Every structure is written in structure tokens, then in C-alpha cells.
Length: 463
Image 1 (cartoon, helix red, strand yellow):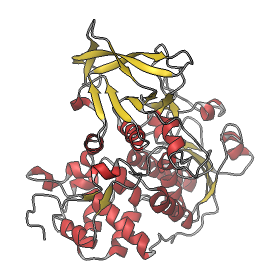
Image 2: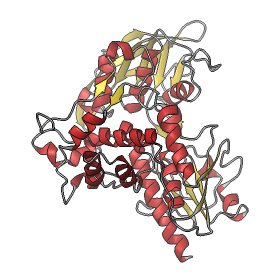
Image 3: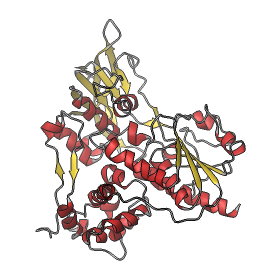
Image 4: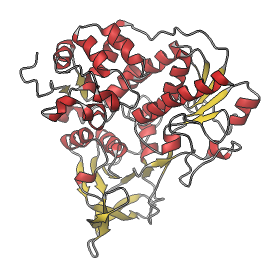
């Protein structure tokens, strides 16, 4: 039992100086002794607020009780009732603002480390060879799922558990969506974590077809009218990067964070034995302050660069997780806050040679409640660099919406879908995750996938 029940059992991590030179996982997770010790801190609340904070409604006290009893099989079964990706969520979910943010322990001390315990259960279950089981009878109906990211995998897994014949169509050559192309190895190992989680979904009976671009290879209408699918779920994410439209943004050495991370994570550009090179800058500027910006900055650092993060608001407004900012600082990332780019400077050959910055101050709050940054006249200066990575958010690719008749989209090019059921303006077509909300978190996308699976089941059960 912990000596101090008000504090979490610390989690082991790689030393910052060592991990800044490799792509091995930063957080080492709990071992058995640590996990059981941390599980003792759970009060097993009858009206568990932590469940309310979980977008997929995992029975958190239930699985932690099983950990306390060293019953990994039961703990894994409880989690799998609600989540198809526990090893992923245990690593990348913003637990501090969701389940752990609601934990009663957090009122007078530190909340229970729910995420680290979920990771422990998932990793241990995988090592023990425990697989999810399907008990439902086949319903004889087919559902197509577009996209194999967290939303698509979750929807597909839930539908398979209900007895549907499910096929996922993935545009890239490897399943996993943002889990494989967006999140770096040092936060989410691909072969150790993502691959087995995808295999667990396939073990439920889900088929995955890669290299299928919906809107080109085939269309949503064709899936329904020609290929015999009874419903379609669009979980294609938001992979279209945004830029600032400032002078010099077309210079060589300017990347979107999406391209930079995809080349490194999916195409292994950081490895010498992969033929997918990327320009390795010696001095890199990352523009943005979200989790993707932290991922890009920490990846560039591991490729040997000095890295600056330029963000137009203060540290208090950084949208990235506190843990990610903390890790970035530990590793040596330089934060240039309350500053904003106004021009990218080019050399005579068209390559980046620097970036012109203007200093900012916080003014009145904007629509979201955050104080709006305001330029300080005459405060411009230059940072010398050879690479600029733009991490300003993403929006859905319009390919699917533009090739699907009767599918309503909003002004942000996101598909309009019902929050509770995932239903869209087109009958038999459902949508969720980033394709509907714009770029958000893995767990919110999973929650949308679960809601849509329920909505599809209700529709197909009555039609």
C-alpha cells in the first residue's frame, strides 16, 4: 500500500538526456507491484464520477478492483466492453481533463492514475495472450467503415460484437489512422501497441482493406447501392493541414506537421534502413502549441535539431497536455511564447533561412473565453532557422463529402452528424470523430464511434 494515499505512485520514465536521442517510449509504465499499489488508492465509488468523465464510459472502478485482486483477465474483459484500444488510450488520452479530472481522490490529493492502470492492464493482457471474444449471433447485415483510425476501429469493433459483418476501408497502406501516421513512436509504439490493438479488432471478425481511397477507388453511394452494404460509417478523420498564408510559406523546408510526422512515423524517415528521407534541419521552428506541435518538436529534436516552439499566446493557454509540455521542456525544446510569425525568409535557392516574428500581448477574451493575442507594434525580430513546421490544426479532406450525394457539411467542411447517433443528412450514412468535429482527441473520436455503432444497430434493427 502506498505510504501516502494522497499521492500517485510515480511512473518510471527514460532519463530526458537519454530519450532526447532515441525514439524509444518515454514513459515506462507501471510494473505489477506499482499497479497494485496504485489500485489501492481507488475508493471504488458507487456513483463513480470518473465514468462520467470517460467518453466511452469504461467501468473504471470495476477494472481497478480487478487489478487490486491481480485478476488481469477480468480487468481486460471489463475494459473491452467499452474500449477497443486500451493500450492506446492508456498512453495518449488527456485523462487529467476527463476521467482523472473527475476522480474524488483529486479533491484533497492527487487523482488515481487511471490511464497508467489502463495501460498496465492492456499491456499485461497482451503479454498473457488474452484476446477479446465475440458472443453475439451473426445478423446477416453488412456495414462499411471508412477510416481505420480510433473512431473507425471503435465503431467497427462494437458492430462486430453485435453480430454485424464489418469491413473497414483505409486509404493508406497500413491500418491505424492517426495512431500510425500522427503520434510518434516515443509516445505510442507501433509494433508493440498499435499493431496488436488493430489485430484485436480483426480478431472480432472485422475485415480491413487498405489502399482504398473512398471518393476515388469507390464512393459511399457505390458501397450502398452496388456493393451491398446496409450502412456506412465515415470516420475518415481530419488530415487536411492549415497554413498561415504568410509570405515565404511556399519555401523549401516548410512542412505541415502532418507531412513531417507522417514521413517519420508511418514511413520511418528517422531510420537509416528506410528509403523515405526527410530534410533533417539543424535549427527548426515549430509554429503552434497543441499536442501535434509538441510531437513535431520532439521528433525534430530527436533528429538532431535545436528546436523552437513559437506560440502566440502564453503558457497558460497552451492547448497541449501539461505532461507533453513538461516532457518537451525536459528534453530541451525552447518555447518562444507570446510571439507569432509574420514572414518566412528564403535564401537565393528558395530554402528557408529564417523566420520573422512579432511579439504579442494578451488582450480581451475571444469567443472561447481565451484572451485574444494582440501584436505589439515595432517588436519584430528574426530567428535564424533552416526548417519551419506549421502545426496550426487540420480540417477534413473534402473528397468524401464532395463525392457523396445528399451529405450535408458545415462552413468548416465538416460533415454534419447527430451527436448521439452519428446519423447524417443521408439515410444509412453515419459519421463521427474528426470528420465531424475537426481535429480533436483520440478518446473523443472513439466515443463518437461507439455512439454511431449504437445508432447504426438501432436503425438496422428496425429497418
